[in-house]
Length: 314
Image (cartoon, rainbow, N blue to C red; front, side):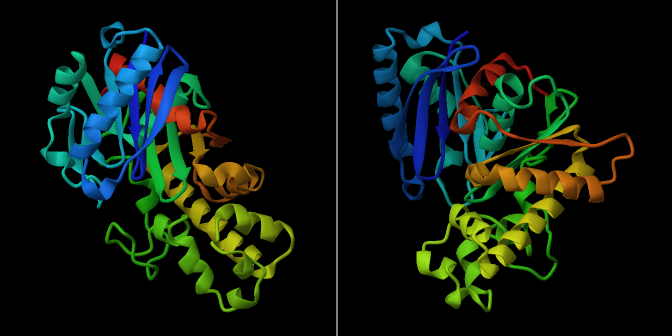
């Protein structure tokens, strides 16, 4: 089975032709979510035409186009419901019609976090597990849940995909979603600069002399013994620990998969969270296994095959 797949983020899109469990060929193109989705569609069409020509394939050789979107998606009608500031014209667009007109094939859509979980379940770290929660630690914090082999969707298509918006601090920072003290607002890449500057010792730390601050630098300076970096690192680990316990209590998984760019420091994060969960999550049946995602940026693309096959449909 082959398929077309696009993973659309806020500043770029990856277009790919995927095989059964591999990305055959792909190309990343720049996008600007602030200008809407409609101007991006001709770019996606042109990119796929080039990939198909390069691979000596036609669109009809595939089973369809899987569209991974960075917002809330109605997977029953293949419509975008909400965008949170990116591609705000998305809910007005008929992407099924665009795909049929452009390529003569069907289109199916899902939220990017659900697509990443589908990919890891089908071809990565979650193979063989049907009760899984995935959380991505990056610019924000995404999440998705699978219960007994089916993705969790919910009546309004928000169930399971707001893992970064579980409150962990009742009097914390205001989150982009409007809530107070969400895990994303307390320990994500977008919140890290403010978190650092609020630390009383930050200006005199080694970390402050190497801006812009990233989690990679935070963990490096923490490893070198910088006290401010250690304090902020420990706070972030505790936030992620609280968030993962909340996810476990909410969705009853046997496996927790952690992805995203922050997982470059998996050697520190994984044992910390495994220990935290074992101490604080109430799972009388046994212990939740914690592992790192395996597919990296290909996860959402490789979710195309199970999405188009309906393997995890509700």
